[in-house]
Length: 344
Image (cartoon, rainbow, N blue to C red; front, side, top):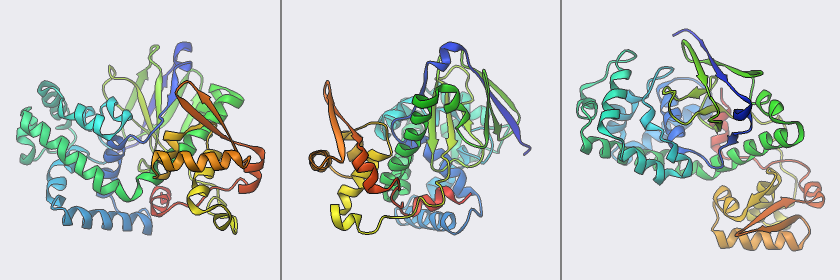
């Protein structure tokens, strides 16, 4: 399939309505990871991830269902149904699964029909293609179980990675403006005001935002080319590969975990990677409970390593100059998902 080009056309109102996803959208990561499962190569880490996920799915008795239901719906570098990635997924996995389960049968029929020119739709999807409500709910349940198995060991790392990418883009926005942020999305995209151009899987696709704004969703599993929804009428989103970390990003300051403790160091580095982080975001991105994150943040605040400012019903934590000096501007090494995401 030949390469194409994606053009996203902004208005002045759209530039003021660009937002960056605040949490991992697991349904988008599901779609992107299914593409990775169908490919070969990508380095040892990606190969290892594929092997582990297949083993885990087989152990759970889901491998056959994933191969016969999910994989055919998400062909590599081709159209896949938009109903698989509802906007509710940006609020959390369960919200997205509930929206998927409630997809109107008429929409399912229409979008599966749109899939047919790209791939042969197998007989295992006949009931779904007819918009059978039970099949739609079964698809939602299979999707939920796939996400739980495929991402469970990596969920904290995925949140942490998104947090750093969000902070990088937010710094560009606050320091240099929206033009700099859009220009800094990655090497596969080029900002030529008022148009954002990107390599695309195939064909030519123009998305006119018309004042609706755009949600940017950095992805650990998206590779090379960004992805957008096929339906012009849906809330516009752009899923794109997160930037690879600099060469020294895996370095770790000697002795810091011994000084502060492993969890407290993770929390401090999570705060350092953002322009402002709430306690609930700290808990989600570091895999700790809300009370644990709060307790560690209080210690860091008393030690002068962070500031903690209350805004209405939440507390915003920010790194201080002392905290920045202590961690030496280095981020902690990530577990295996970093290797998977960076093995492009």
